[in-house]
Amino acid sequence: MPPLHVAAMLLVVLVWGLNHLAVKIGVADCPPMLFASVRLFVVAAALLPFCTLPRGAWGSLLWISFWFGTASLGLSSFSLIGIDAATSAIVVNLGTPFTILAGRIAFGETFGWWRWGGVGVSFVGVALLAGEPTNVAPIYFAAAVISIVCWAVANVRIKQLHQLSAVTVNGWVSLMAAGQLAVGSALFESNQISTLTASELPFWGALLFAALGSSVVGHTLWNWLLHRHPINTVTPYNLLVPVVGFAAALVFLNEPLTWQKATGGALALAGVAVIQVRELIVARRVAAA
Image (cartoon, rainbow, N blue to C red; front, side, top):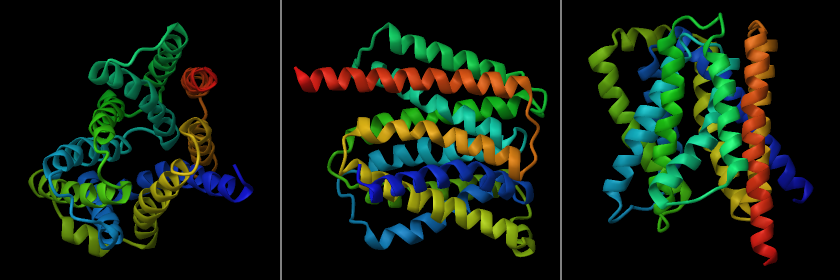
């Protein structure tokens, strides 16, 4: 990629890696569903002026909004009440093996022993993280893992929406999910107005970074790069995201480094690396055939 495009990709890596810290800071002072709802309302407000009406795709977008926005984002925000941002940055790596498994179930996609091995190594790494002593309760770690499963389910339907731009999908999905999360917050959380009015600068900075930095800038640049380069050129940079998130959490949030975090994180990252490298090799063989 040209140097400007590499710089754009590294910016995506930075904002996605730091997003775990932003959400961790946000949910420290705000109920998780409320935080996720306000975040998505900001995303929708930023993107909808550039969106077209998704005629004939409202049902698909509603489906995606539940799995991607309400379930995945809501659960991931909830999980950061009880797990470290560094742990969250590693768990998000499961998105790659879970998406592969979802693609196999939904589309009959096949892959060999190298990628099966990568999936297995990733799961072993995450299993080690599950026993990490700084995790407050298993429910929070389980929520983080389930949020990635929901994200993978949403990806299956997103892959089928060829007629809509990424900005249109992101804008409408964010609005729908924001409304769903607002209803959930009204039913299961309390003191929403007082929480928001009493929030101080760190909270609002974290919220705006998560909404505008990660969801708007990050995803817009990512889609821009995918339209200009082969997916196998762009996706390997994703391996840097958990590294940035992990390191930033240790440095800026003073989270402890335990052997479970170090070993589990390394195994999870290694498993995803095997999957990514194998996909790159297969793609090059297909292109050369």
